[in-house]
Length: 127
Image (cartoon, rainbow, N blue to C red; front, side, top):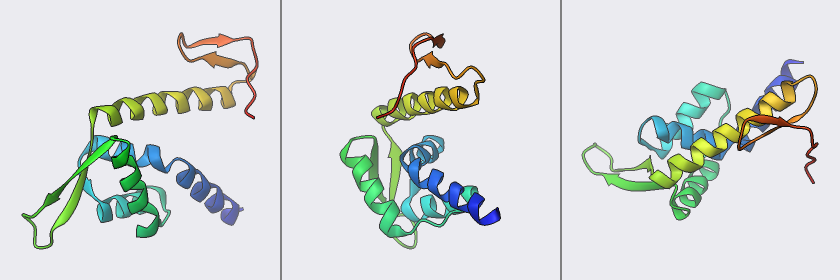
């Protein structure tokens, strides 16, 4: 059972990695290695540089984050921070995930309407 739980935790972390990175950068700017170590400490999942850096580059291309070189440290580091577009995407995604989680835990299995937070009687199926 422990292996299954670890597998599920890893799968969820990887599946929600965009959201996790946006959340970390919403709290404060970070360099890439700091993102990797924070995820490992917070979620118990090791994601290597070959996973995290391409994701950071993709988020930057979408203008959700921006980067700047910090030359004030012993070793220059590229520091990432959330943009206004990134904050909007983060909050929308987090709210959407909350609705999904509430729906999963809802006994009557009705889907809440995202606009009004009201429950819709129309079932929604993922294709």
